[in-house]
Length: 78
Image (cartoon, rainbow, N blue to C red; front, side, top):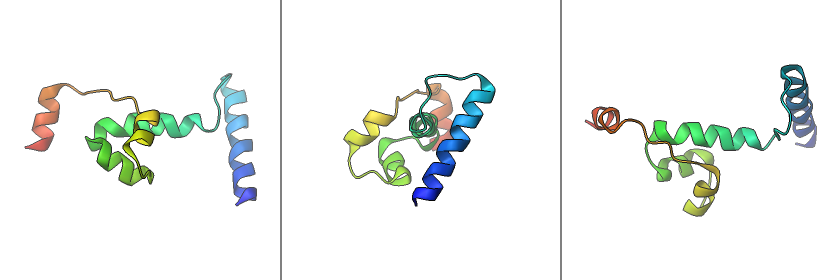
């Protein structure tokens, strides 16, 4: 597992360096993914299941809810 972790870290550092991005940690990818996923799955319970979290508190720490236009949400639900 450690070898995979170090490969991800090196890849992340390489991509950030080439893109000129600073102050973006490897863990920030998880936060970014959760933030973008929440509006797509529609609720914190589904997000928790997908991300493997046991508590809603963890989901709230990682995800910033960005509500789509209410009409778009209603169409998806219908």
